[in-house]
Length: 341
Image (cartoon, rainbow, N blue to C red; front, side, top):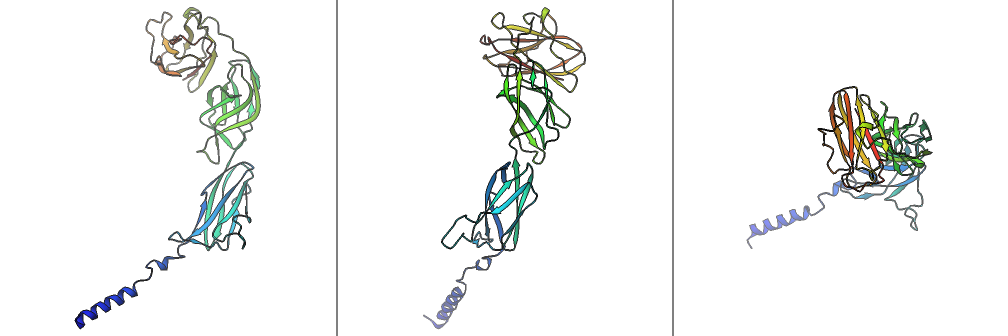
């Protein structure tokens, strides 16, 4: 080998040796962050949940946790360290620490944590386990609406809210402007505990809960409305005022006739939404007649869907809601009607 080539080889080798150290070595232990597992907490009222803490550098290397301190954002939460977590002969492991967070009242908040010179806030939501309500009645006949009020509680009724009695659903006839009161048409013949669906805490409005209330209701049995077999004797359905919803239940005798009618006396022009649901039967159709002969019925809600629902643009006059047991197998079915304007 020539002297000049040998010199170049030795110089290159020396350069490689000089650069053979870890090029990221100066990042170890830098840009520390606290990691929480889970990263946010949802705790039932009066319940407790653990959260594990670790400290990592920019490369993801776990560090020993030092100078750990923590506190709750309000009295709705309390927090302590679990000193028994991951025990070893030398005591708890230094790279992971566990906190126990307890929910004292229904609220949202956070746990503020500091360690290794950095800080983190862990968000916490307390899940409600029940709701206290005010009721207009606890014992009512069939087809009598009941108001359910959440006033004074940290809750509102969310979209799609309803209520059940012993698991049987009624009809939501509308909410107050502030969404704290529901007008509820209870299922006939139901008796037992009242529960609410789609309740939104004011401190976490995007969440929805189904909550027991601690109240029990007793609703009278349903008797068939008289005269539904003909438009000439059809009973009057409750017509809603603008911006409201009405409703009722019926137990028509589909064995005697598959067709039943309800008079709908409109005094105010506008769009009306009529919906019918049923407890048994494969296909009940809904139509709206604009005269007693049903000479030109609107069949938009005769689709095979359950429930059936149609939107009708009406002028003042008398109309007839027509339901038909199209499937021929709805004997004994209870019908529920919802009418909105």
